[in-house]
Length: 120
Length: 107
Image (cartoon, each protein chain N blue to C red):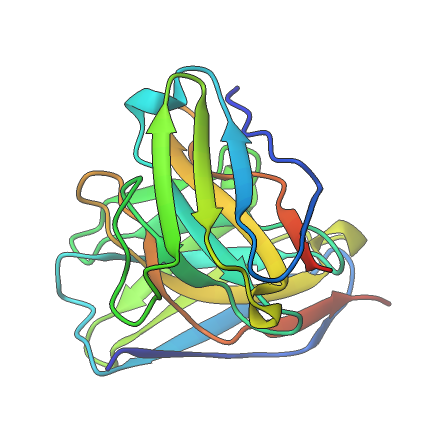
């Protein structure tokens, strides 16, 4: 059974970098799936941030691309998100997700999510 | 850019059928996926590739997709189906997109 678990600071100051890690158990990052992040501001809908394959290929939301880096550590079976120059608009619950890229498939596994608040 | 349009809310009585739509230009040519999200919980995939159900999802959940509209149908609605529902597609140039979400209320 695949399990994803987010970790990282719950509070980030404006203009700083938001950094989160997702630990994956029950499945290898070196498989035929992409791994990435989806966020949800309080009371609002879902927004895809980006996804990455273990061979280095990646896709990012064009609206966030300039500020986002996703990286995979296959030796630790975890991946991370860095979002730079954050503002209050980046306050959200951040979920790590597994994406079936083949046939532009679904996000078939989700972490429970972690709330990150951007505040001085 | 590509936009997915969902009604903000749908209400249905227990035992009836709920239909939640997801509109998009020629969405019938895309693979559509649907997620259920209960308050405070992570989304759960309920229908993928237009019509398929993951294991563990009741047969009451079904999907269709044609023309400019994809539809999630929930038959014999139960109180436990009350949740937010999101459609999702891939669109070249935009990447992975979600609809705005629909709140299903069971009367």
